[in-house]
Length: 281
Image (cartoon, rainbow, N blue to C red):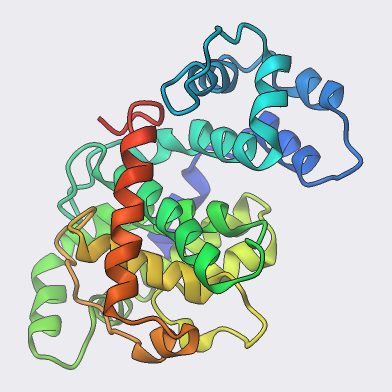
């Protein structure tokens, strides 16, 4: 087993940027001011550029150009800005080709963003208010694949052999041969970045929602969003759909096939608006 080498690879990942960490904390503080936020992010070119790019996109359809960060913050609001900061920050981790999972350059990023969008659509249908950490957890749910890709590539034939026997899901085969699976690796990455426990747990359990507590609002939604995203062919690599379905999650929310079809339609409407902005094309 390569578990020690895998843990070392986690430690080699760049830290989550300090600017983004501070900005996200401010956005979660209802008493924080726009001036506090601007003082943090004004020197981050990527975040500033993405805020202005989104404000001036067809998504908002404004008649005048937004030229300052302050104007952008007023227009977007905290929730939207939080999503932009996250996307601007984590895209560099996801954009590379991932040979282990047979994902072309950018495909893991498209899957991450699609899962984020779908998680919000599902949440709008099944919850009274969107959990604050939902988009973050959804965007990062497969961060473990970034670390585990090279190890999966090395053991791929053995992993597939176990899956074809019919007794193992892809996740279980990873754990059997590597001593750890991509969901657990992702949770450890989130821990190393000092993310809140609810995000860590949602990443850890995004294929095993039955392991979540009854008061966990994130995990079951992210599980469903991931499955819907894969079923649309976004981010389907070597592991494909070799994961165990959990019908009880659909039943918990009273969702039927018709609901999933409507979710997919809503997704494409949203995805088409943001794909240029988030570097998805």
